[in-house]
Image (cartoon, rainbow, N blue to C red; front, side):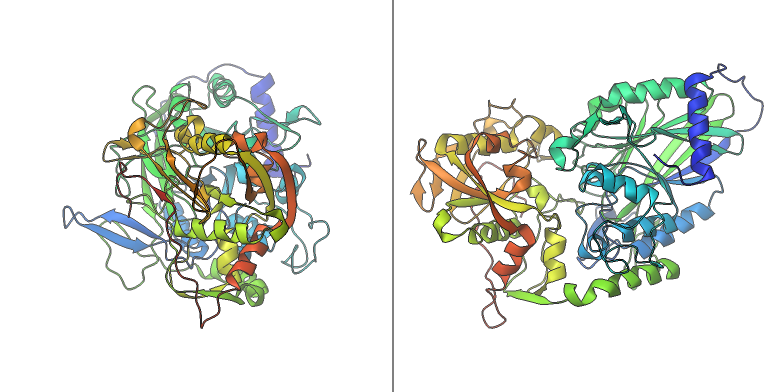
Amino acid sequence: MKLKSFAKLAILTLSLSILGCSTGPIKPSTKPPVDVKIIAMNDFHGYLNRSDNAELFLMDPDNPGKVATVKVGGASYVASLVKKLKSENNNSIVVGAGDFIGASPAISSFTQDEATINVMGEIGLEVSAVGNHEFDRGKKELLRLQNGGCAPGKEIGRETCIKNREFKGAKFQYLAANVIDDDTNQTLLPSTYIKKFNGVTVGFVGLTLRGTPKATRGAVGLTFNDEIEVINSHAAKFKGQGIEAVVVLIHQGGGTTAATLNDKSCPGLSGEIVPLVQGLKNVDVVVSGHTHREYVCTDKKTGILLTQANYYGNVITDINLQIEPGKGVINKRANNLPVITDQNKKVPKGYAVLSKDADIDREVQMYDDLSKKKRSAIQGYIAAPLPMITIEGTTARNNNAEHLMGDAIADAYLASAPKEAKADLAFINAGGVRSGLNTAGPITYDNLFGIAPFGNNLFYVDLTGEQLIRLLEEQWEGANCRNKPLMKNNVNMCGRMLQPSSTLTYKWDVTRGPGKDFGKGNLVIVDSVRIQGEPLDMKKKYRIVTNSFLAEDGGDNYTVFKQGAGLQDMGVVDIEAMVNYFNRYPASSPMPPPKRRISCDTCPKFY
């Protein structure tokens, strides 16, 4: 892989010296401790500007028990907060835990995500782990975004190489310590990044979750190695070289049941990141991502500081390390800071309302103007909002809930099937619904693209009634519970819920216990299942419309899809299906909100 700058050459040279020329730990120094600030983000997903009224919930120290709600997000506001934090300490670095691109709204996707890569570089991002969505367009495209060059087959100046008809590549370095390119048997991108701060050295290891091939269709030709083994190997080499602090940037995460930002008691912390952190050695800090949650926690077993900063640029993590030269980290603390945009709102003590950074705002506006005409075209009207259900206290999507927006997309999927296909029902995965429609009235192409930005083809596949029940059980089994943990009122509500079309209704019972191994769940009340109003026939074949991520890949651990028969590409892309569906509803006859399809009498209520 071609390195573009002296800085990258220096990084690689130092990394090689660690691997092959170790001289042993450096001797303790009598120099005073050095304060280092690490400014961390994750899961930005190309949200350069925010129009979805994203909110966070803050505790108000002047009014105990009262929660303040603030609007958050937007790259120009992120830039202002980063600039403020960097001004507090010259020994600063901006880092990421992946998914800065992919599943992006049109303002970024229409430029092959070059817009976000450019803006993040201007904001000051210096190094980031790769996330699963960085692989959405395949390894060649990821390397192009890192190294530069125009996207093949795209219109220069409009779809690629927007700035001065060239694209120089990321100003920051992507890391992929556990991602092996099968063609070369080498890591696709560098594994580590090393930086000196006034006499002390911090080593960063960057990587993504081993299950990335299940979370994106673009991970072809790549092998993803065990996270713990890879991290511990690099951390040991760092320590052997005398590097005083080791920070892991990893696209993997968990969640807590906290109701407000910055609850450092970390109630109910769970998820794949927990055993991963507990298996690490010689690591001081883990900056995590992927689960779109917010937390600052200290692992009791290892003492490792674990953080995550929500998603879409809503939050930035301010990590402060006190490092003694020749010894290591002697103190560490962190806070999650909301990117508050409410210009006329009084916010609780300790928080600040931000103004736009003018330079970043101009750049975002340039990208916005390029695609505004297409994005602003009205596609239909809705009679009432179609919101996402969020996890209380955060803007994180609740993946184990039925969303009106998800219902509407599933209905659009089903409506896109040709009549001769005789499709019975449709599903979209919860992770495929990126946002909701929070205001009644006109719906633009930009709205729809922001909800479903993946460009997945739609397929149909045949499953028996027995297989359908097994598919529904996978919502709450195994990895789907571990990846999407959630406790409410001491009830385990973990999982990922498939969003169904109106032709499927059923009930489930949480008291039967989610989280069982795959193949052993029994939460669906089978007698309640109805397809097009008729009781389920366990032996009958039902034709199901869904996206390629589920149908072809069995993505998000829905393995039953790959056991189906008669898999057929319908020749329709998801965004086309949504546009055609919403076009049915003019201003004179707006779309009514969908009726709910799933019920759980034993579940705590989210709405």
